[in-house]
Image (cartoon, rainbow, N blue to C red; front, side, top):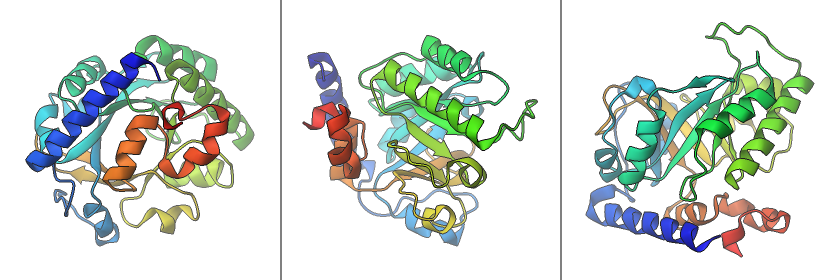
Length: 270
């Protein structure tokens, strides 16, 4: 890790500790769900909470969200080969200025080439050393004009191409976000070194994804968070403060650092 990158991460960690000491909420349950489901009760008590946002959340006060106990934000950046979320650039700068760890995600579509999508992501998302690893959002495009549904082999080829391009651009191992349907149809049984971010809003991930190890859990889409207008997706990180700091420093799930280190990843952990 460069001296500049270490400096930005150190500043981010300092802001994190200040937020925690002033009521950021590292310990104890964090409430806030318009339609809570008992199946995800454990998520509300997990210490490291965060949100993911897109244009629908409009004008976000990241300072207020961070101070209220949201430790991270993932924000939509790009989709397909030519769509940029209209709020991405503003959200990217405002979250950074608030000291809130933030990462960008790309929504994969199946009607354009992976190479086109990779080029678009690279052209629009800055390679900021203090950013969280990028996220590849993998779902079937059920609510878009794209009705193409590739074969499992074709989908996996596109996914691996995109993950490789995102890692080369940012220097960080991308996170895979997915839902139950896409995981069942394409990802189940496949090995990836990447951290997984799993959507499960009515049950714990182990009940929906079998033995897939997860790092982030999207546990509701009807969350309520100070600084965010309307409802917002809420997420939990699997571990506590120590694991979270390790993740911020390395960009890797702490449980995977030993196996990923020899490949040259998680460099700052060495």
